[in-house]
Amino acid sequence: MTDPRPVLLAMDFQHGIVERLGDDAVLAGARKAVEAARAASIPVVWVRVAFRPGYPEVSASSSFAGLVGSAGDAMTMDHPATAIHAALGPREDEPVVVKRRISAFTGSDLAVVLRAARADTLVLAGISTSGVVLSTLRQAADLDYRLVVLSDACADREAEVHRVLLEKVFPRQAEVTTVADWAGTLTTAP
Image 1 (cartoon, one colour):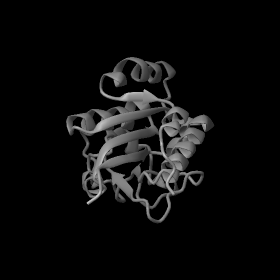
Image 2 (spheres, rainbow, N blue to C red):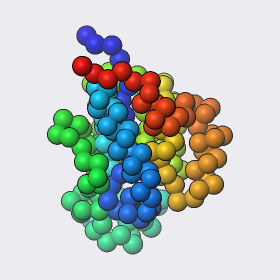
Image 3 (spheres, rainbow, N blue to C red):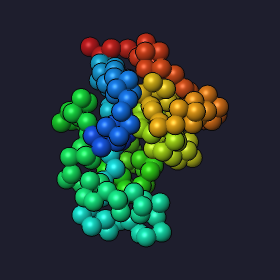
């Protein structure tokens, strides 16, 4: 039996979202976080949002209704826009979790994957800070995970919202740090 360990969650780094944000710095930050996790033998779990054709998971009253209504098939499982960005690409041994809502936990098998990994700490990176990162952080805190947010591997369309979340909201439930500072605490695996 191995000790519990951290898991890096790389969330919503998919083509459509990365390209809509247009921030290469967050992609570079995510790439550095993934490289540091791999070097330290920390599992990387990829999270993406996608739906079945016709969006049967989305009710008319859902907050997703407007988004998917204008997306055509661009938010479906097999559409290139929902694939993990090619600059990051998951390895074959890294699970890709598909979620159906904003939080990485909702409508996915993330809890099962984390339990199998014996995770006790979640290291969060994602787009957007006010979406998947906030929602996942809140739910993970309620599930008693220790939390780390990688500030330069998160981004939001609204710079001020991003700043307030990182400086005022997240520190109440998580350690907020940079990728470089987090990577500096890791031990490289033999």
